[in-house]
Image (cartoon, rainbow, N blue to C red; front, side, top):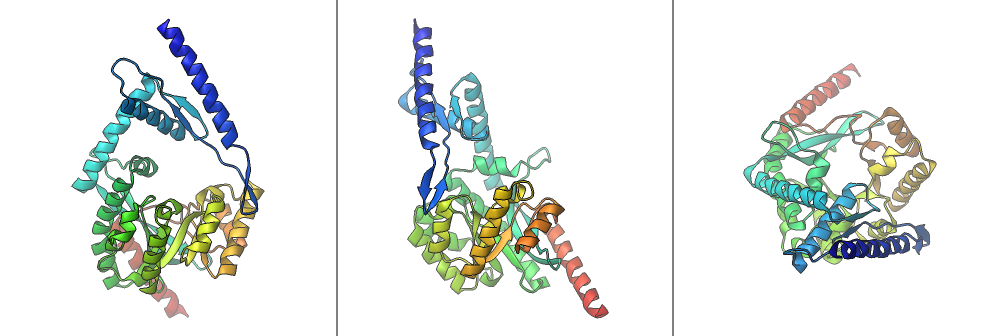
Length: 352
C-alpha cells in the first residue's frame, strides 16, 4: 500500500510541475519584446524513514541541480542516483573550499586581441583549480560548485591576492599601450559586499587605469544602487566597467541603461551560433549598433573559429577573446607572450 501511495504521489506532483513549467514557458512581453523563459524543477517526495523537512528540501534542491546540469528546462525527481550525485557534489564542494584556502586554486590569464590589427590589448584573470593528480578541474564545473555567493566572493578574493603581485610585476616590465587586465567580479555578490568595501579590496595596490571590471547582472540585483556607486567611483579612478553576457534577455537592456558602463560583452552563446543561426547574427548586429549609439565599446568572448571571427569583424566587433587566439595560460606564459609581443612591435616599428 505504501509503495502504491508513493507511486501515486509521484504522478501527482510531477503533473503539477509539468503544468507549472508550461505556464512559465508561455511568452511574455517585456520592454516591447516577446521573451520566453524556462524553468527547472527538482522534486523530493517524503517523508521516508528519518527524513526531516530540511532534508527533504535539500533533496529537492539536489534534484534541481541535476535538472540544471542536464540542460535546464527539465523536471527531476530525487532518487537514489540523485542522492549519490548529491553526496559527490557535497564532497567536491568541500574539497573546493579547502583548495581555495590551501592555494590550489590559482590565477590563469587568457589574452584578448584587437582582431583588426592583431594587437594584444588585454588579458582576463581566470581561476583554475589544480587537482592533486596534476589535472586541472573543468572551469565551468568549478564555478557551478562555487555558486554560493560567499564561496564566490572568497574565490575572487584569493585569486586577486595571487594576481596582484603578477599584475604589478608585469606593469613594471611595461605593458602595451592600452593593455588592460579583465577582472570578473563574482557572479553573485551579497549586498554587503558592495557596501563594506569588499569589492574595492580586490584591487588594492593595482593601478585602476589598467583594469576592466566585468560584472554580471545577478551580481548587482541585490543592491543596484550600491553597485552603481562603487562602479562609478572605480570609473572615476580610471577603471572600465563591462556588462558580461549581454544579450540574454530584456533585463540586461535595463542594466545597460542603469549602470555606469564603458563596454558590453557579447554572450558566448550568440558567438557559438553566429555563423549558423541568422537570429543570433541579428542579435549581435543589434548589440553592436546599440553600443555604438550609447558610446560603449563592444567585445566578444568564446571566439573559437575563423568564421566566427570574420563574422564579428564584419558586424563591427573587433575585440576578441577565445581559443582561436590563445588559451588560458600561467602568469609566466603571459609574461613570455608580452615580451614576444613587445619584441615584434619594436621589429615592426624599425621596418617602417
